[in-house]
Amino acid sequence: MKLGPQRRIGAIASVIVAAALVLSGCSTASAPEATSASGLPVKTIGVWQSQASGDGEKQTLSAIQAAADAVGWKTVVTDSNGDPKAMASTMQSLITQKVDAILTVYVATGLIAPQLKAAKAAGIPVISVGYQGTPTDDLTAEYAPDQAEQTTMLLKRMGEDLPNGGTVAPLAVAGYYGIDQEVDTLKSEAGTYKFTPLERVDVPVTDIFGGTTSAAVDVLNANPDLAALFTTLDIGAQSAVPALTQTGRDVPIYSFGAIPGSLAFVRTGEVTLVTSDGAKSGFIAVDALLDYWVNGTAIPKTTPTEDAFEYTIVDKTTAPADGTEVYPEADFAKPFLDKWKTEYKI
Image 1 (tube, one colour):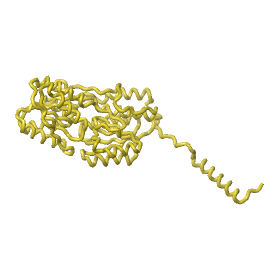
Image 2 (cartoon, rainbow, N blue to C red):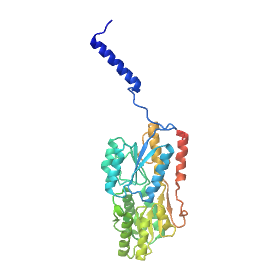
Image 3 (cartoon, rainbow, N blue to C red):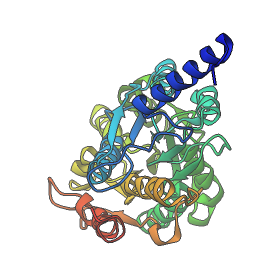
Image 4 (tube, rainbow, N blue to C red):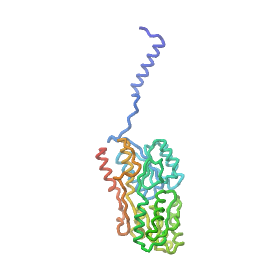
């Protein structure tokens, strides 16, 4: 049977389309997700840092990088250098690059609120790690030590060291929820130990080191009977010590976070602090993302019970030797690496 001109053209077109589909490998199904040699999905993790020069952020970043390397994931790391405008732009850059997830290290949530909404709209999970950020539904999850709980521990130790109580000067930084928790807890529980907190002094986020030293000098000069300095951020202790030298005062400093810069002064007896294995949050986040992408398990909103953070007081008698840490990365990483070896064969 002969085909008319229109039918011949239609038949030829159908053959061409079919051939093109075969040659190109096209199908109605989506392309398979890229996997590594171990069979795990290949992912890129964006790491947003508020101020990478801080030792606490360095510890957290190190844990994130170690965890990502262990599962074969790439990281894209940014640093806002404590600049609020840069915080917004670096977060936006990770969204623009379409990373698969973002881990925010020591997040000041309010300074990147629009970008958090943008990431959520783009379907990019955002997990806050290392330090508490202001609660928001635009964060997928947060894994960070409880600053209020640590403050309660620190106040108990202060009460033991200074049984007569006295005035306490909180040196803080605005915009950080974890710091607000520390100051609020100090105010609510100070009376138990006969302490009277002065009004908090907020140092500039763009000059935390120098700003803390200057603020401490002013407070020491204005309060000759000051019982203690209470520095709320991990880098606060090492920044407050120079103020003692400049004023010739001998006032104890109580602080948070056993970072190298602070431990040097803990060993001399000038600082007592409370610390946690908060850097472990990097491994907790990668573990949650693995379970999400491999098994379809929902990302836990808060730290899983089995991964609960540990807290301890560190003073001159318990400080680790120079070059070592209270909570070594190798120690808190091992349970995760063992788990991944068993569950994911890596």
